[in-house]
Each structure stands twice: as C-alpha cells, then as structure tokens.
Length: 143
Image (cartoon, rainbow, N blue to C red; front, side, top):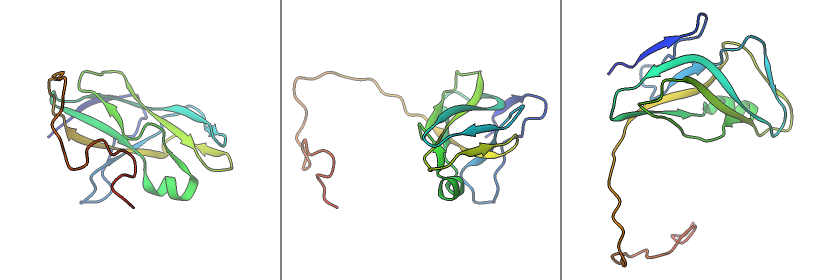
C-alpha cells in the first residue's frame, strides 16, 4: 500500500526504523524549540499532509521510548487521521513528568500506524441479547 503525501520544505518523511516495525516514526516540524511544562499539552506540527486511501485510517500512537524516558506521550492515543482529512498532521503531546521537556525540530515524537476501517450501521432496539458478562463494566472480569 502507498500513502501519498506532501511535505513542507524541511519536514521529515515518516519512516520505519526496523524491518518489523508496525509504526512509522513521525517528527516535529518546528521553527524554534517548544517547551512542554509538567502537565502541559500542545499540538505539535509535523509539516506533513496525507492522502489516505478510502477504507483506511492512520493512527497516531506514542513512541514507547519517549514515554518511558521522558514521560511524554500522545494525549488522545491513538489519535485517528481520517481518509478524507487533508490538513497538516499535528500530534497532541502531553508531558506527564515532573520537569519541563523540550521538543526540537526533527525530534521523533510519535508513530503512525495504518489500519483498515470497518464501518457499520447502528440499529436501535428495545432489548439486547443476553451474554455471559451482561452489564458488568470496569473490572468485572477480575484482575
């Protein structure tokens, strides 16, 4: 599969870091460094614009190393880029650590995962079928 894109001059093209990687790393496109204070979140530009084929989405996911080392993650993980969106890809990052974190131009900030989309129709009913779990919610299946 190919995803067409356009990029601002100097933006970094998404890339898979290993042969088995599911996500392609995406980088910040900044004119100057951005500081995320503890607890702060911001939409970070990438300088990329995607043309995602119909029937697919691109999920924006955290980079595990960034989360582990710095406490910085994607706020709405996974974020979804719909196939009909043509605006700039921006990544909402949040700093969950207790110290400021600086994002520099070109820093790898997230990963993009392409996924098929299944659409359905919704049918309202007065009653739903029974199941073993029933209405048991959070934690109802044990630890």
